[in-house]
Image 1 (tube, rainbow, N blue to C red):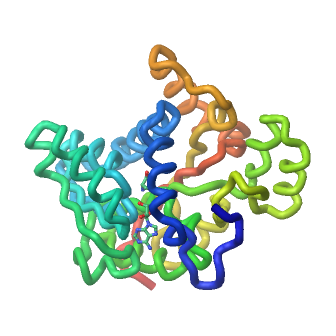
Image 2 (image 1 turned 45 degrees about the horizontal axis):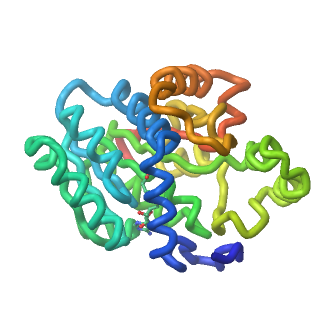
Image 3 (image 1 turned 30 degrees about the horizontal axis):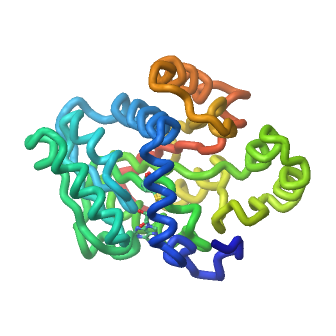
Length: 269
Ligand SMILES: C[S@@+](CC[C@H](N)C(=O)[O-])C[C@H]1O[C@@H](n2cnc3c(N)ncnc32)[C@H](O)[C@@H]1O
């Protein structure tokens, strides 16, 4: 893996996607990975109307987010360009209760083509851990705004530029942390080429598309930088701690990830 920055207009996920898919699956299936799925789901479920909703998950990966929303009664369409991950999603769905599995459909394709692939009028449009691979997020953000119904929600999870150096710093990599702090981009071979955002900037971009932000949370304030995995016995306490910290300043500002929820206005600009 190289740490070359994505070129203009590029999608860094698509370079070496096979190796990337394996590393992502290992992480996403870990306890820390599950903490973030639980936090994001908790934020979404409390914002969704109390009826079955239509959801689309752009870059939905191996379908874990879709399953959690389907278990809450919603119908979810996963759109993803990665065949390996969609295969993993099919396996995950096969292991679910049939009524949950039936609520999720898998569509192979790029998010940028999602309107043509799956239509519009969704109550919730998710795009989690995808924007960081895009050199230019604007075309995909524009699609998210077109997919969502008036009054519906757009949910974006991505890496927070404002807290980027914390992981290296808290792990004792002083030189790496300093370089990351000064460059606002992670340095060194262990990082994939990614492009962080800030809640403020992303909120402004979405607002300009007629989808102003409603709230943002920090995701993984305390557990991101730790090298050891939390134990299953610690899971419930960790989730509650991360949830409470992610709601509050200044803690949420130090989280590795931020989760921004926005609501589409009646008319697009
Ligand atoms: C880090 S994974 C995140 C998956 C999932 N959303 C999650 O939260 O765990 C990034 C995903 O984005 C997908 N992806 C990247 N660029 C995409 C694009 N332009 N259109 C659709 N999917 C894309 C990849 O195939 C991969 O499944």
